[in-house]
Image 1 (tube, rainbow, N blue to C red):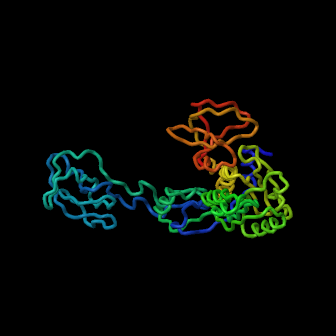
Image 2 (cartoon, rainbow, N blue to C red):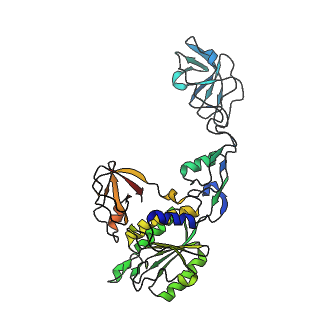
Image 3 (cartoon, rainbow, N blue to C red):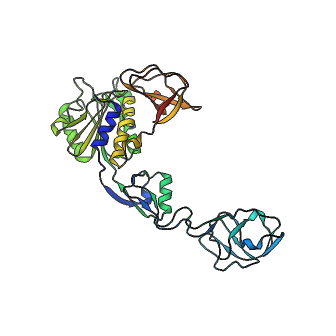
Length: 395
């Protein structure tokens, strides 16, 4: 059995990115850059106005009121092609190129207009209201580094760099297997006195997609070893990563590891010293990876958030820690001392504090939905009083 930090180190050592592909930037949301984005243009493309107003020469200001003849208009994407001479001005709009001869903008609120004459009655202030060419970035600048997740802000930068396509890491193909004779489709449990909705599979699949996986197969298996062995072979043939929910403990019908043994399973860790999620395990078969998660819904989702998200990050060119954004938070209610298993308490955040939920059982489903963070409590640590700072991870 390994500690949580040891499990992350093993994932880091075992996982390599799968390869790269070039895709259109408008299809790249949520992907990870495999090559930097280099600006192909300056931004702004020219000196442009930061406000609606009038482009003038600063030399025309001084003694007020000032009257200027309006000689043209500059619009975004349609510059005025003349020159602003002394005693003249050009109507200009936000984002429009600054005409030749002008060196500042007087905002429209400071202008009194009468026909084609603009009057400036008082000093408009020192602000020039001009965005200089290349102030944001210049052609040839690296805007986004390899390994950057293309979140909405990064997509704006990539598109602003005039990148039509980007090089990204391939998305891992994931086959999801769930085990248990009692499991049925949601909506069908009411038809059988012992049926249990297969809820963990839905949550784990959603989390895997959130972290970049392409779910290529979802299969529910009976607790029959021969059928499970055949399903394991099929899953490995279709995916780079197989995730198994359930069958990870030591009962007579817990076959999750055994179903992969004939295929050459190299077990990298058999258990993790955490609560919930001790039965989680990880291995490889050739160049394929297998992650086993506990069957109880809370245990399955918590270990998926901790281990599967880290694994998927590493398969897409990011460090496992990219999925583990621990944040400090003030504890609203106390925590008892922790035993030898590191504990991840389901908790809710409100009014600047986090409070562990009262129901922490591994089979919890409603309580899981009420949680929005995990509180990390290290192994063998003392009780934590209300008001102390703890580390939390967003679920």
